[in-house]
Length: 238
Image 1 (cartoon, helix red, strand yellow):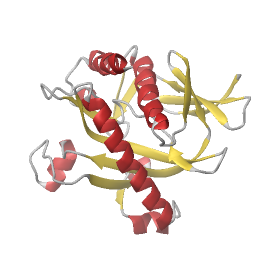
Image 2 (cartoon, rainbow, N blue to C red):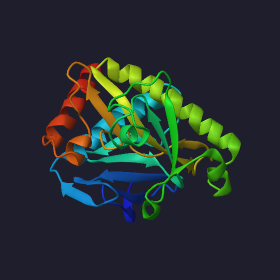
Image 3 (cartoon, rainbow, N blue to C red):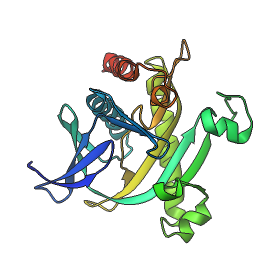
Image 4 (cartoon, one colour):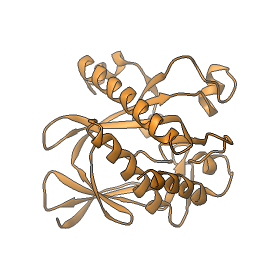
């Protein structure tokens, strides 16, 4: 496998082509952004932690029958992934309602509903990633109704698997944002982005301490130290 030209440059990740037309290399950067790129900073070592955490969680899903783009770690901040055609849709799974979602719905921060809340967002930063429903997604040509049912089922399965797995590490999976794409090797719609403290809310089960990007959003400090706690606990499960 040879790393070739840069084909995508984002704030928190870069994607490189390889000599295999169906594989790419994801490189995680130390940059952190929030509030649609209004707030940004660099934390030395964060990219390495995101790479390793995401590799463990995506690998766990792969091992349990949920297809993701992850193949293997190929460097401290790099992983080999299946190439996908991006679908600009986010599926957000909420086990608790917190932050802006709690405010929007007028409930206490951290409210735990009797069901699992599933949201869909149009992945368009210029529009602020607006909430949409399945009819909107079909109208925009993002997916068919059948495909939307599939990704919803996959997202709920991933939530159950990862929630139980993280519980073993003393971490509560509060919510997570999943992105999907069509794999170039077989055409399947698969999970196609990181699963890390940058895309999930992780709370310490014993103390309620935030171990995710909210530490940056809310100026709580110790961003890298909190991510390292997550990685250390996951490594203890290996």
